[in-house]
Length: 295
Ligand code: HEC
Ligand code: HEC
Picture 1 (cartoon, protein in one colour):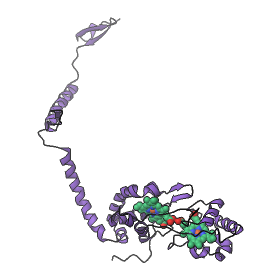
Picture 2 (cartoon, helix red, strand yellow):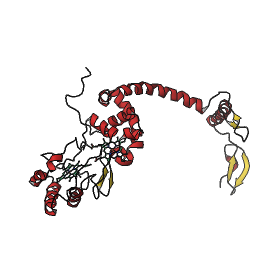
Picture 3 (cartoon, protein in one colour):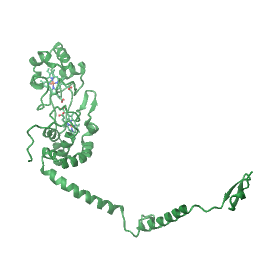
Picture 4 (cartoon, protein in one colour):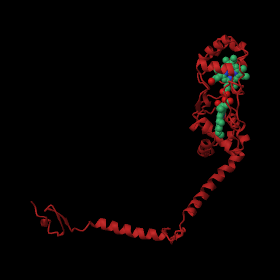
């Protein structure tokens, strides 16, 4: 058993437990004392400089000798941001979506501010980041991230989809085709080879889907050969599409992209931003030799 009084002559505080455990009266280390003193001084200075102390329940408080308030700081930050934005926003108003896209600095700005706009106005139907949303009929609103477009993926086509809205129409064929003909067509389409049956041309599918079945952007008719399905791509799903059509009355699939010009919710500049933003998802199609050469 060692003696607690043998701790290099340091006296104890007098507290002793279990006969040989005791508190010595050593000073804390110097660095620690300095740190403690410095933080105490820091507290006093901070307390005096910044608004810190409630004076009454009615909300009055000691305002601090520095005159700092969160509002003035926020306003100062905001005026810096507004100045930077104002420059870009003024330019955007004058430019076409294609011209914005040709300017890398503006495109960078637009893709950043487009994120919030897209989240607020488009994501409910098109999904976060344009991955599409699904319902019973397949895709409720189409994927905007891929390069498979109904109405075209050139910047101006995307812009028009947003400003004017889109409502593709495929007529119902329940009164035009026999059940056997619909079966034959559905099987050929499901296999990705719609033109394998002569019915595809004879029954007028080619009028809207093109002689090769690859679709036409002018009317938003889907490409039937790429294995990418807008609606349900099973034989039953395709049978239903052929039978009842799209946006063509009872039983038809419904697909309406609202016109944002008509809705009046977005400014023209905002719709341009969104066109560039959607284009930049990666599926945008470059219009070869059509972009006005900006020297
Ligand atoms: C109410 C749901 C809804 C909202 C909101 C909506 N869309 Fe759409 N959008 C659709 C549907 C449905 C289609 C497909 C229309 C069709 O198939 O005829 C579509 C089509 C499109 C297309 C054409 C796609 C293609 O393949 O050619 C683009 C581009 C587009 N939307 C962008 C947007 C943007 C940008 C916003 C936000 C400003 C937006 N949409 C908001 C439902 C919506
Ligand atoms: C009046 C024009 C028109 C005619 C005629 C037409 N289609 Fe369509 N079809 C469309 C349009 C437009 C769409 C895309 C609708 C949308 O996505 O909003 C479509 C979509 C489809 C789809 C769904 C594709 C997918 O990705 O889910 C199938 C399948 C289809 N058509 C098959 C046919 C067949 C087979 C015929 C001939 C019997 C035919 N269509 C005749 C315009 C037409």
